[in-house]
Image 1: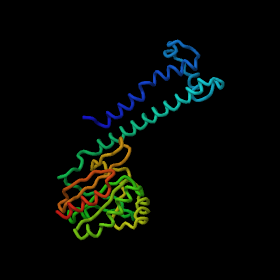
Image 2: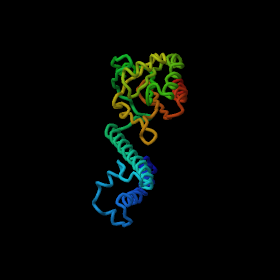
Image 3: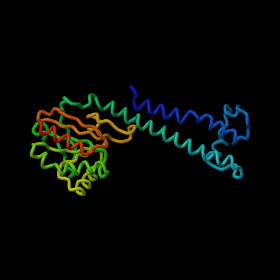
Image 4: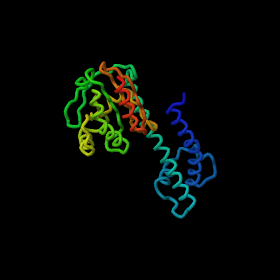
Length: 249
C-alpha cells in the first residue's frame, strides 16, 4: 500500500540523488582540483569555510555554485527535519492510541478545559444527549472559522434535535476564548493542549503529517459513534452531514 512514508522516501531520493555529485563538484572548486580522490580525502575545514564564507571573492564560478549548493543543501536539510518531525508525530500517535475511535466504537468520558477555563467532563452529556464532537486544526484560521460559524448558525437546530455540539483543538484556553468571543460562538470549545484526546481518537493528520486533521464524530445517547466525517477542505459538509445523521437517530 502506498503510504506517506513512501512519499518521504521518494522526496529524499529525488532531492538527494544529485547531492553527492554537487558536493563532489563543490569540493573540486574549493580545493582547485579535478581529481575524484578529493571526495575521499578526510579534509573538511576549507570546505566549510567555502560553504559559509567567501574564500574566493573574485571567482564568479565558485560564488555562483556556492549559492546554488547552499540553497540545494538547505532544502534537503528542511526535508530531513520535516521527516523526523512527521516520524515523531506518527510514533506518538501510535503509542498513545491503542485503538482509534471508529463507527461502532464506544466513546469513553474525558475531561478538558473549556474556553472559559472551566473543566468540562464529557460525561456531563455523554450517554444523556446526542453528541457532535468535532476536531479542527486551529483557532481563527479561514477553514476553522467558517466551520465554527456554520455550526453556530445551525446550533439551535442541533439543540432542537437534543444534540450537543463540542469543538476540540490543541490551542490554549485563552486562544479558544478569543476565537469564541470574536465569532460569538455559544457552543463549547475544549482545549486539548498536547493533543492527547486527538491521539486517543486516532484523528489522522494531513499534508504529510504537518496539519492536524478535521474530523467530526456523531455519537448517540448510548455513547456509540454512529457516523464519522473526515475532510480538511469541505468544512460546511461536516455540519450538513452531522445534522442529517442526528435527525435520523
